Image (cartoon, rainbow, N blue to C red; front, side, top):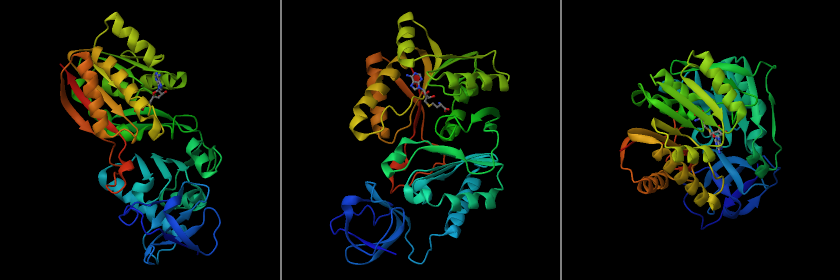
Length: 390
Ligand code: SAH
């Protein structure tokens, strides 16, 4: 196994538990390796740091899998890590549906596995992890005897690792439109063509957080995807709910979800661009008791954070103007590039421009099946805020 040595003057980040080693942090190397191979990493003075997979094509040159020299990276390793992660989810009560593996936070860098009852969706987003797809699938089969496993590797980030975008079955083929239960509701999940892995599990606790503000309310949800928050609002007693999303497919599924739950008299959905209609509806003087906003990331790169902030400010400003005095704004941000403080500051700026006072009701993050590791700050990415708009 090749040995790679960290440069003397690198930050303590790696030593303190962060699994990524960037190209410019590596010094000497001993031995040969192929892209995706497991290598040993040592500090400049020769003390063992860990073992991980290497990819010379990637800026993130090595991602560490273990800090134990004696731990072999083999089928057993993947089995044990997945089993450990499953025990953690079970302990916290995420049993039917959960993010089973949340990459770095589960010591499985660049691996995502979502569990939707008996079905599993896998993403291997780095070359070294992709090489172990067989071991990962074997472990899932052994631990869960699943009805199906599907690969959603149609993710642009794979190009940074020199890999193609693909999707398909990792088990015998199965019907990829499935139904899951969440908080007493049922949802269609399109594993093959839905966004990301098909469903946003990270908001499952946050959807419950709207329970008390929705009773008898008129509700607007923008960026509703398959209508998950909208249906929760109706389930919790809303008088009427309008959900909007730019995707025709998402809106079609949202309508089916309303029918599936017998809430189609209360919920209606429209496929429109939120930036156009929110502006128009403010002008028309529309008002709602509850306005919910869960937009996409708006940025994928650090260089464009300012654009994201402008986007968040604009839609939140509109959202506040559409909220009746004393009503509630439910607002989220799903990119780790916008920090919690930056998000709150943006909401505060929007409130100032809208001449409204905010009273904080709920301020939380992603569900605990997406664990946050304190020495890997990017593992915290979701911000979820409910404010009363006075
Ligand atoms: N709240 C949802 C997830 C929302 S993801 C859930 O918990 O399931 C963000 C959504 O915003 C996507 O469905 C995407 O189609 C939609 N979107 C992106 N740009 C939009 C725009 N300009 N107008 C309306 N919807 C948009």
